[in-house]
Image (spheres, rainbow, N blue to C red):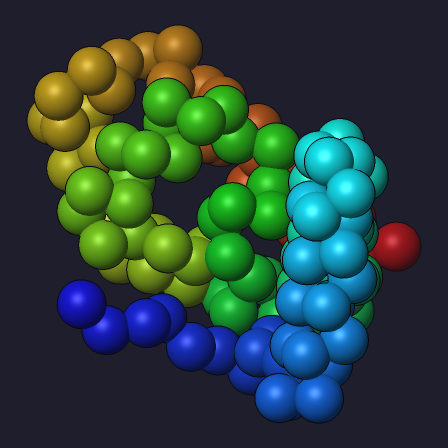
Length: 117
């Protein structure tokens, strides 16, 4: 399995700092704080307001986990991976109906508007 890389990757030094912080928290049994440290690292690295939407990972959006997992099954990891996909393609996916389509459209509209501000 190859790892997905993007321009949002962190360098080795940043990864060591975050990893050490999480390791200490886990060793102390503070699982909530470790989870929060990982979450904050993800947002600080990938949630850049001026980032081109094409490169932003879907996992950093407000898509629900079920829809996110469905898209990842079809190697759709970023908003850019949705480019060129039609509504018919999306609706043809298993468990992707009108509600899922509406949610996806709402999230895309929100992300576009957020970057215009």
